Image (cartoon, rainbow, N blue to C red; front, side, top):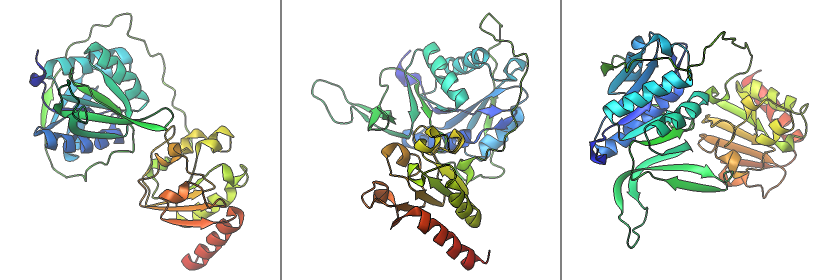
Length: 346
């Protein structure tokens, strides 16, 4: 089997409880860019039970084809049947590129499938593009064209690695949620829907789910917020986050934080922004008492407007901020909140 027989950019369209996860639409958006560079199309792979009706939604977000594997064995995510289904699709249809979201499910499914189809996988990518590999011509080494260049932070975010898989197909990557941009929804757009089922034979790797208990929590998703008021170690204490919450309330936004805040137990990890937290793209991002380490900046640098408040005028956060205020956040934030209340009539 030659590498030239592998065609198309495929994405795994994750669904949970018959609702498509937002990462699927983000992957389609990036896949369309890659497919345009390669002169090919985008296929979404949808696995589940009674999920064929979700294909139209994938089409409206840009998928040209949707391969549906619909089987009762896929009703709830389990590694073995899902890995069998996705690996079977890859072996049957031979995609050149296969993208999976770096979600809890994707981090389990992606590596399992890549091992079964005997290819490599680059985890937790933040940039994907088509280019040459090696990046620069090297004497004695063939430079291959139209390769998927997969970029991800390495060594705790202190360096950036660009990885390729020139000798195996498909080229596989898991992609961080919130990093890629989904396309605007095109109502009524249709895709070719292909129904495929490799058949399932339960074995001793098929775990039996006895019960599913869904936790009811009040945690909001910071990735959906248009305005984020984020605090770091410089806020000083859990109690001090009250002034950030008041500012967020006035602006109709949400509070988020850096890794140091989570480590100190001031806020749950659900509110953490950064390389080991969530990647966000709000309209406005307040970085209050945050030094601006690269691990944090990686999760918020795509915000439209960044406002930094820090007493250290040399803090790295000011290098990425659109507006910066040097001073005591305990004085600045309450004054800013009061001014906004007066301006907005609250």
